Image 1 (cartoon, rainbow, N blue to C red):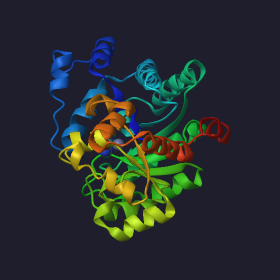
Image 2: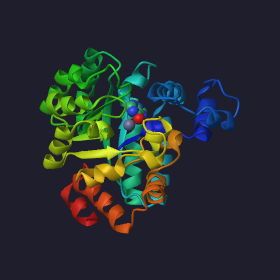
Image 3: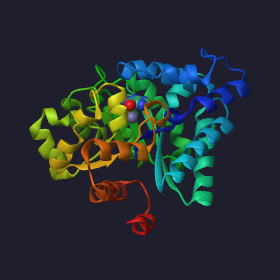
Length: 312
Ligand code: HPA
Ligand code: ZN
């Protein structure tokens, strides 16, 4: 439920697409790209993330990117994937919204046919760009609305509070779209409350900083607001120092509705299974805990009721 499809771009595919499109990369090998993946914070990651995705130009590129990820996810036992994408990052490079959505949707249709994988598409706005730009993108998306399930909010969190996007999210609500937002990854707990109050989001991406505010934790528990937590991402971006310091056990003890997700699997050390395994190693969780987390995801995911019943 929390996967940036551009963050699933493995260095090997990055080189293939660079060659196909005549894009030059600043790295001379796959190993050099991987070696650069040592981040001090979210911004350090975002700089490489936006640079890497510059190889994506055509419908086929978006299709190949998504299909490669969906095959890997299927191979590790994933049955439903919600792909989030960052349209502004591609529009700014002259790649149309239609190109992006057509490529992603083509892979999603093939994954349904060939892998029995259900999927949803989340269009995320960049919170470090103006809200007016996000509104323009939303209006452009009007002609593709049946292909978009939800809107999201991502990119650099500190200093970019959710409330700036209240109008954009109100418009998304009026258009019948579900809403999610990153909050409380690097930013303060107050951004989580703000995302709930000003944006009307149904779930929070990350949310790990909620523990700073006991009243907020109580609210999240009472309303059973899902948090899409990404433990390996939090370690790689130094939100926490190590898995042993991760607040997931405390969040679980607090009775919150948790799911475990991969965020940007190519950059942060693996997919959903790797995140589950890291939790098993760090916290000694047994099968019942993981079944509970997977059940939470199925209960709140964007899928039709027939699919939900089939998976539960
Ligand atoms: N946080 C915020 N924005 C992002 C992330 C993240 O972990 N990954 C891709 N965009
Ligand atoms: Zn994320």
